Length: 175
Ligand SMILES: [Zn+2]
Image (cartoon, rainbow, N blue to C red; front, side, top):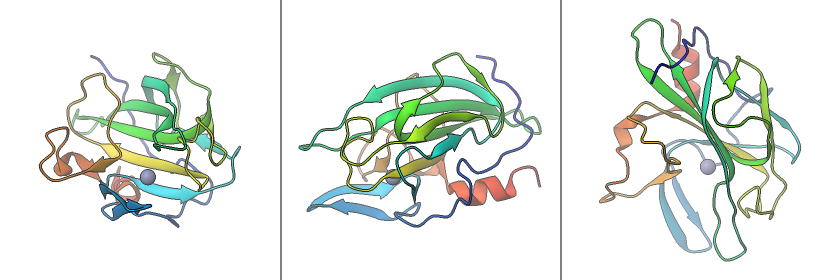
């Protein structure tokens, strides 16, 4: 698949700063251990606009509704990118969106609005108490499926080395 070149990256929210679960921390909610967090959580009010971190192509845009019984992604978007310097593909992921403005196949530009943060305890935010964006950078192979938000050792679903600290990745990109 030919992905679009992504010359620059920027943060997906205005004033982006990790103020909830950080990359690499363990997510434990109501006694359930979800594993190692593969992204960064940033708290924002429902309805706050979320922007594409870079030029690319939407490869996944679906609702994975959460319920009171089991939290989930809610609305999730995955954008494919390609680093023009090394020709390598990578992906940015945006979870717990209240609305998705983009569908699979759409081309997006850097800082283009792709959705909004979801309201707490709705199927769209995946039924979490905290209104937040989950943002990840994935550099492994992509098989057309939604990507996980957590990693548990022993799981074959993904490898920790495929996942990058999003804030560091964005700051270093293009250096
Ligand atoms: Zn998260």
